[in-house]
Amino acid sequence: DVNTILAIAARAITFAEGQQQLRYARAQETSEDLARRNSKLSSALMEMQAKQVSALNVMQARVKALEQELEIERGQGASLHTKLQHESRQKRRLEDECAMLEQRRVHRNTFVANTLKPQPRVAIRNDAPGPPGHAPPARA
Image: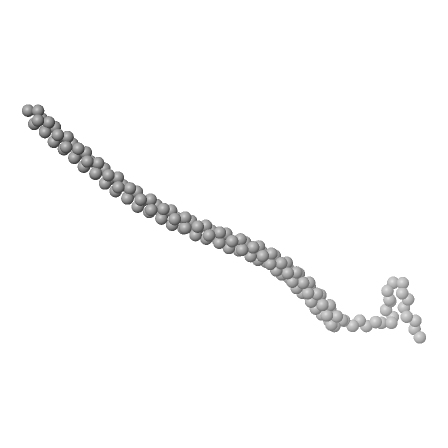
């Protein structure tokens, strides 16, 4: 009978609509769940990026501080190098002066030793001939 067929068809359509509404509700829930997850992931990503930017800023500040410290140490190193060169020149001057004073001392000691050395006494005889071209002393 037609009414029975229409009743069965109406039930089938109602069942299909119910199934479609269930799928739609599940899809809606899935979409909302994905939106929540996406929001959480986005927040976590933003937080992670903020931490990384902060860490990067700290590292850049450390690098800059180390570069400044290195520049200061380079300046101090150059200053120490200049001071070392100056002290090295002074040392050479003092060594030269010491050598000169030692040389003078040796010459002075040699002179004093030669001066104080007993000289052999030479007896001069009046009858001894003198140097060539020199007449012997006259006798009285």
